[in-house]
Length: 173
Ligand code: GDP
Ligand code: MG
Image 1 (cartoon, rainbow, N blue to C red):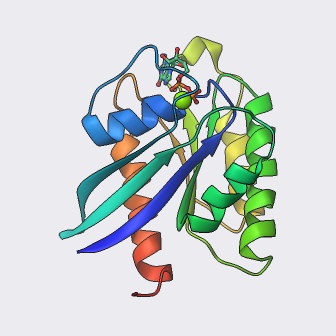
Image 2 (tube, protein in one colour):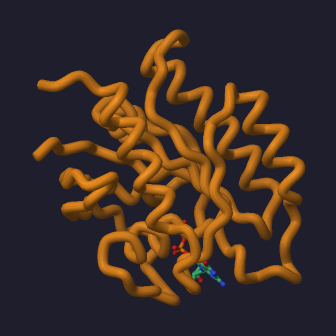
Image 3 (tube, helix red, strand yellow):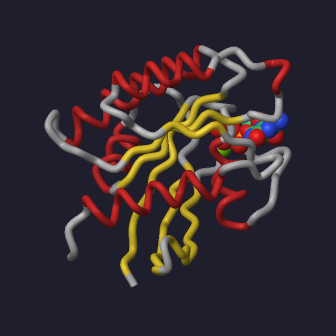
């Protein structure tokens, strides 16, 4: 079975831990210690084939650190997370993407998905789908998912897409 390392990055409070825990344990944790950084593993079947996926749920300071740089170096696929209810978190994702390019190389073609969280909080939504469609085309068609870890909407789709990209783009070891 192939094994892949995914890294979940995004501003504090956007729902990175809720997304990771929903994917790995199929539960919704209402309150999760924002300083806990944890790597989860699960076997995951995509298109009839099993893979082992390690999901690193990053935490802590929003600014760029040597530790974050190390995660990015080791990571093979990236889940960039923002909250649909907080427009500023989308800008954070733009900066994270630039940091990944800086570390992986400007011409690298790393597996990447963009995830908007808290889709269930419809009345608090700040970012329309049209903004996300524009961003996706600006970024060469990167897939963007609108999700809710609370309601379990589209969470598996995020990781299935990432696994497909990792299978295609990461060479066999
Ligand atoms: P992190 O700092 O990015 O890891 O964010 P957390 O996963 O700790 O979530 C931050 C807050 O957002 C918590 O209060 C969660 O309960 C809440 N949250 C996360 N995902 C969702 C979601 O899909 N829907 C709703 N309504 N709340 C969410
Ligand atoms: Mg967290």
